[in-house]
Image (cartoon, rainbow, N blue to C red; front, side, top):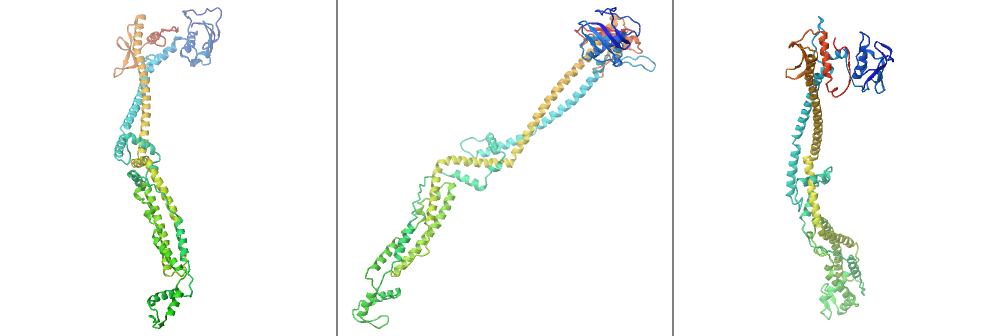
Length: 568
């Protein structure tokens, strides 16, 4: 893109400048002639502001208007964002790219670096290498932390505990049956009891109960049925009462004691048919008196004999009325029950035994009254304060019947229940192991450790990326630094080939390690040059400018070249 003219200028020495029709537009190659302070350098400064993309600090309020070959215009407002490709050599370029100082004698000292960018390369490299060192140290610390975490043996020790515990469980038949138990199986059980270990821990009584279930062998059915007739006692009571309450009507109102005495006395006097002496009182006992006694004590109705027969029959069968625990239980015993029903059976059997004892005690009371009636069949006897325990016995037998049914049904579930018992006992052992070993807390610590390692690995990867990027940038800067040597060679070539100056040359300096340090020295006839003239300095600077046109920013491009006072 070519510049055709400066349409308007209010900048530096220019005041309300207008490009008139009397001035031709710029061509491909243009040469400016003019006296000093005629404005040539001012124009170069306007052009250089587009190269540097910043306004000249001495003319921040200046304004201008540049016409381009495509018909567009550039103003002071386009300096920063414009894409105008231009390279300018002027006194500002020399000042910025010659780092020289004047000593007290006014002599010009040899400059140490050429170009603003190249002047800072070594400093940039040093800064980057310091950052690189810091990052490498941080990386080393991260690597050490990771190594320390990886050397942590908590997980190894815990895994050893898992293996050992799984082996102990595997050899105990109370904990499993029919499958192999190992560390993997233990971890599955730990997941089951996790967060609620206490719920799986059994007390001694519970453990013993489950062990008893495992000891159970398949049993035959009891087939127990409650056949107890709870109305029997009332039947016995009623029948006995009816007999005991019977009364025999006799001719003479005699007491039972007297009647008995008369009956016994007659046995000693019956064989005599005439008057005889009473064997008790020695008084005369006539036949008429004996007949009278017989008539008054005998029961002409036959009721006495009947009652006596009933009492005898009742007593003869009374033992059959009494209950026997073994018979009423139909010979079922403790051994007929599975372990989880045995305690219930024992308790019910004890209750049944106590009530049977009470039942039989009440029968004994009736029996004693019957025997009492036998001694005096004439006197009625009432049964009082008699208790019936039949309902209690019937209820207990119903419970035993239900217990027997459950026990019989349990046979079908024995295998399943034993599997459940083994699981309960195994999980109890696993839960106790979890509490004793504190394995869940250790697992959490290990998980945190792994998360830390994962975080460290990410940080290490990030640091490695940063280090790689930084090393790449440092290498690029070193390449730039290395390119200075090539630039120096080009400058020397221009000095000798184009300007015929064979005495002056530039040499790149190196540090103690033989590395380029970004500094140069100027030699005259092979020795360090001192007291350079202003012309020599500007000559070297212009050669540098020409050489810089081959740098990466300019190579293969076709920029506008603007040269103002190349050689003084």
